[in-house]
Length: 270
Length: 287
Image 1 (cartoon, rainbow over the protein chains, first blue to last red):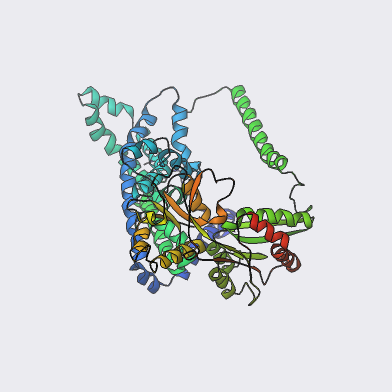
Image 2: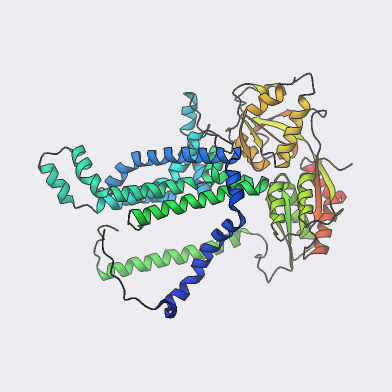
């Protein structure tokens, strides 16, 4: 944890930077406040027991937890490689990992369909083995993983890079195996970065919509996650949609507060 | 970023010039290419006299595109802006105050919702076309569909539109009618609904999923099957006795800024020319 240089305190009422910051801050806060104002707490609690709402919440929680676990499992080696190894084409790999960050989710959905759909490159072969992916919760997890993985890999990569290589080399010289070095030296030093990356990935997966509706489809209880239920609910049952929206805002808010406050680490996107 | 390499000032300058040139080229191309691709005058505010915003059900995509072009040819300086989505999505947009001039809905219910929201004057909506449902399947027929009863086959992947969308509601009406028909039996509807894998927001999304082969079957309008996709999908007819007659309604938006243009557009749709265009796209005339 580095100490950031603190500027001398300026009377904020006379500070022009504060006034210039207000437009964006108000713009960001206003829709969220409007959401809370439009949803009276009594209705919120009542809607929480609505079967459609419960289905969406349970499905979202189950899939995002699975997604985060998968991302940590397969993303950690990538993060470590990017942080520690120099190899030809490293910039290309780095760009590939970053790509889902800037790719429109709808594009990700179409691309996943082309790869894993029934007539897709891999999907066709999987289909012949009897494994159907589209329209199942597996498809939801795949869509979420595609868009959320960069969040974890980036943060984990920064976490790993922040460790002095000499520490790991010293442990290796003392006879520790690769796994022992990782478990006893690397992980304890990097865990805050990994955890904050995992939280951001989880929050992103929770909000995933475009790729999900195109690749996984829309079926209550099976593939209708909270964002999909909000989109559909907008036409059908605005109340339920507002309840889900408030829950989503709450979850994202808590995730960010945990990352910023408890872990005392600002989220850096480099 | 980790390990930034030091570069000579000359190399940095060269890189910056190169980057600036690429950006400038990209900005230029992003304006030039779309403009070059449009065969008319650029649609800039100064060249346009008026814009007619038409909210039309997704199933009207192709036919209203043609009618819109016809309208623009007859009214130079007017641009027809088509907002295509599920009728239920459009009705919600109208209820939330979206500015528009004309609303074309695929059923009475969504037109009613727009009227209830105060955007359509009572009695100002009128039918302009009919449509029928048809079952479609991917060209290679993975589920081996031969008759309507096959839709109840266990394991079949059926894609329907959400029940809020008119075509989704009509599909449920069709299934409802089958339960009173001995040829299908009382369990048919439930079995078919058990085969649904996804409820899409528009009929075009249903069409896309079936065309891609993601679904084994789907229910769309007969007008959605056209020369463009006829080779990619197969169809199963639904007999008239079971087929709900979808009625499309057209109405001007009460607070529209282009009253005369809206009325002119509606007149074109209802005229023999408009009806002929509708017929060519697979719609049925109003009787």
